[in-house]
Image 1 (cartoon, one colour):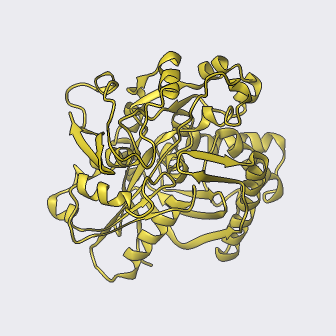
Image 2: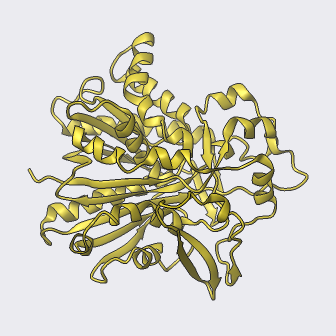
Image 3: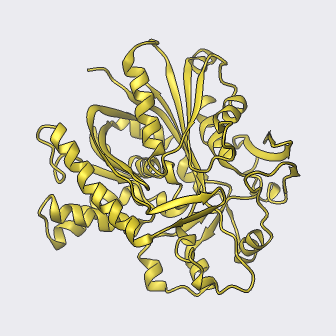
Length: 420
């Protein structure tokens, strides 16, 4: 069977971060309820950040390690996002330009809520497996952004986004897909998918989100079970308890994953209390490590969980991972792959932990000011010069990787610059 999967991978969790517990106290939210989210920090998108800057900053460290010939072998670029800022022009064109990819390259944008990243991965893997262009590679960039507007005079705790705010993040995961899957080798054909029409969450306007929290939870749980059962129907001998040394979930917030895993252990594995708690800590908690520090980044979140698992799990020997991807609306997939000790070492060498540790710590005053002043570029902006106030505050020092920032918009066209 042909080998395919993730050759290289990187996470960009933004330039600025906010402490979630401080935010909850500031908003006078119910702290026990907040604790159920299992969140620690959330990335806050600054005025000069957008899906393109996030995606480019995730991908560039991968490309900088490639030779010119290897870089030119990238024949497909897929941007996976529900935060697109143009109804026609793909964000992939900006990413293609800023990353200096070959012009002999397909590029397009995928939208399927939080499932889009998995759709992009599977599509890229199928290109490699087809063998129509031997030696070709694909670059898949899942990038998303959550923004909230605080209305003066409103009771913050009563606003419909009060408990979504602490878990809404921003950032990107970039993945180089090839037939040399050093980081994650996909189990080809080992995949179960499940979906149907449901209005659990949606974006009825480019800068707003709406939905039914309870319906979303029920749909997520339903799809987790049914997608896994579809996987089990395809993979002889598959067992939820024993087939996977680790599990990585799409993580809107950690508490949702904990509930889903508990349900699966009870219904599918027929396990009980103490065993379920131990299994969660051993197989699932490593994948929550980065999600708790970045927040929900939609289509990239399952890969944020994958990265957390690989960097924080034990990989003395090859280990099989099960992944559950869910996108509202809805479509879901359960699939699997193998990570080797070498793959874990390669991903740890990307310095994801160091990047998350060195983000700028926003004060609550700075955060509220950003929200109240709407210091971000709304979708559809025709002309503007972007506020660069936070650029010097978020510099990481000499020797750090260059960073892409949004500088201006002129006649709807976005202008970017790389800064040291």
